[in-house]
Structure formats: C-alpha cells, structure tokens
Length: 259
Image 1 (cartoon, rainbow, N blue to C red):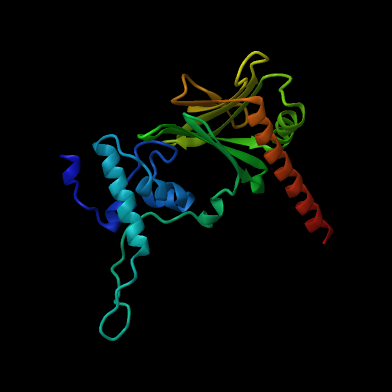
Image 2: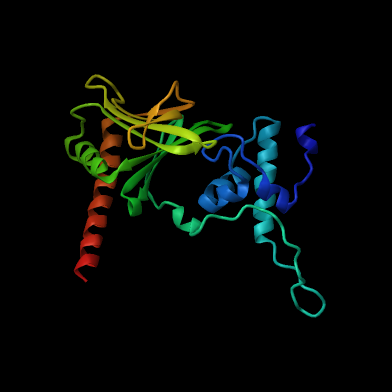
C-alpha cells in the first residue's frame, strides 16, 4: 500500500490502534491519550513520518483527535440519538492527573530533556527525546528519580557547578515492556576540565529482570539509550531551575501542613 493511499480510519479504529514502538509500545492510542494527551497531539501534528508505518500512525492519531473534538449529532427533535455500545479501551481512572507539569527543558542539536514534576509520588521525571532535524523524534526514554537524589544533584549542579562522582540510578517496572519487566537507568557524569561540554545526562531503558523484593536490574543491552552533553553553564542553569522548584515545593508543602 502506498503511503498516499492510506484510508482515513474511523474513530473506533484509531482508538483501538496498538502503538508499535516508543514509550507506549503495546498500548492502544486511546490508552496513550489517557496517560499523555500531549504525546498523541505530537503524533498528529508534529511527528514527521519517515515510512509507511509513520504515516499510518499519524493518520490514526489525527483521526482519534478529530473524533474527540467532533460534536455529538442530534436528531430533528434536538435530542442526541441513542448510540450503540462500542467496545474500546477505557481510560485509566484520573488519567489526566498523570500528566506532569514541566519544570525545565534543555534542547541540544540531537536531544531534548524535559524535567517534570512527579512529586505526588516523590519523584522527578526525566523524559528524553532523541531527534534528527527535519525528521522528527527517533526515540524516547523516561526515568523517575527519587526527590531526595534530585535535591543533591540539583544542588551540586547549581551551587558547585560540578559533580564529585558519577551518579547511576536503577529503576524499572515489572510490567512495563509488553507485560515484561522494563529496566530504566539514569546516569549523570562530570567528565572533568578540558571538555567543552563536560556534564553528561543519559537515560536508557530495555529488558529487565526482577530481583529481590521487586527491584529491577538490566537484562541485556538497552533498547533505547539517549545521551545529552551540557556545558557547565547549561548545567548550572538546569540545576538552579530544579533546585528552586524543589525549594518552592517544600515551602508550599510546609504551609499546607501548618494549616
């Protein structure tokens, strides 16, 4: 089938379409939208397809959003006609609350790093995107950093402007990769003086193995690995933004507790 003759999907077809890759691999478009509406909007409006599959995904996302925005049809009496039940995935409860407020964004020539607020669960979310200009996103990876670790790293970057040691954090999900364990690894490293961009952020994910009381360790090579090199000035700006945000969050939490 030519990419120019892909039929326009119906809303129900689009809702049930299973995403074949990226952070929502194995989930339907409706499930992905329930968890991250902005991601589906990006698929529909900003993703640049590179092959027939890309065009099909874009068409599905476009049809799904169009169906959501379409007003309900009414009959001649002004009443909404009865609708036949449609079997489609149900969004997760309070799904919209799973979106994460953006704290800071850093963009380089090949990668984007979003630092996001997941403080409701005691985490800071690191969402990285690798891209190629003119072709759109190539891969994405996410990591959930404990807020206690985020405080120390933000302080080191903001105040010291350097890291005393390499930091590696292992996280994961027992059912995050097509129902199988998913390993997530975050590395932050200072390569020392003499480097134009000495600070390295790296997020990787891939197959994992459950060990101990639910911990996840990598099981083989990662399927996604995204790195970003920052100058000390860029790292200090990032560190100050995160450090200030966490301080403001602490203050707001204390005021709430006093009331």
